[in-house]
Image 1 (cartoon, rainbow, N blue to C red):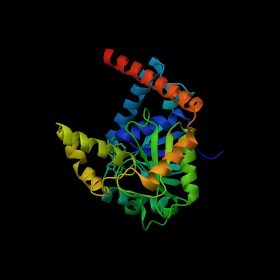
Image 2 (cartoon, protein in one colour):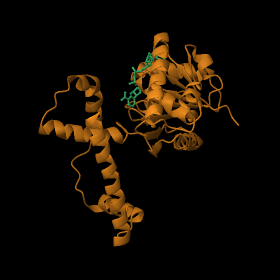
Image 3 (cartoon, protein in one colour):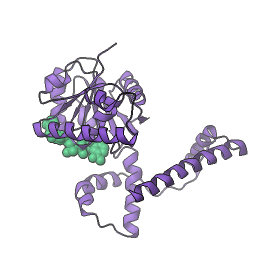
Length: 281
Ligand code: NAI
């Protein structure tokens, strides 16, 4: 079989991705320009995995030691991506920096590896346009931390090859994430559009005192919110489309609706149990 090898960087999101891939049995190279980041990432991952193993929440079939043995660090980009089949870029959210890194990768990768970015807000056309390997480029936007929140938004560049989309989707499934494919890019993708809409309304209602959050996300949020359309009518074609899709998923007959409700209530019960557990910790 092909070399199962993934490269990520050593920050917050990169660490969590590394754990997700190692849990699925993939070899992972942590690449970072800051040596200390790799060291602390490896230490932090070790600590997390050991704790998860003790509490019975470690993912995957391998032990913590076996998973740790799959992860290694590296400060040389060429060495980090050598033999990789998938590269999950997790550098800081800065367009110029990311463009520089994808530009570097473009020069050294083969025609097979997938170049995937964790970016929250930068659009594929901004990141990948003009790259020689644009067909192999895609955004796989995780939710923090991907180890515990499986949703991944898969967002292609207009020139991304369909096989890149399919391979990325399949890989995400394989490692236990819940990928969602977007047909085309849009500011904020889907998750942050939904999230920002809710946050904005909460803001209007009460105001929130979280200056650190504002500092980090103010610009991105305003950018996304400025692309929102007018207040929807909640009727007509869209209503019919949504209604039809929902009816196809869960037929509007008591038998199906009841079992769906049961499923939902079970989930809510488990969530409530988790909340109680979290309070008592
Ligand atoms: P972070 O600041 O924790 O990690 C970034 C890492 O990149 C650091 O270890 C840093 O040393 C390294 N780095 C900086 N310059 C580099 C370079 N030239 N080459 C290689 N490595 C370099 O950032 P975080 O929070 O992990 O975010 C990373 C990406 O993930 C961003 O694009 C962000 O938008 C995205 N993301 C973050 C989420 C979050 O909640 N933190 C959620 C979803 C996506």
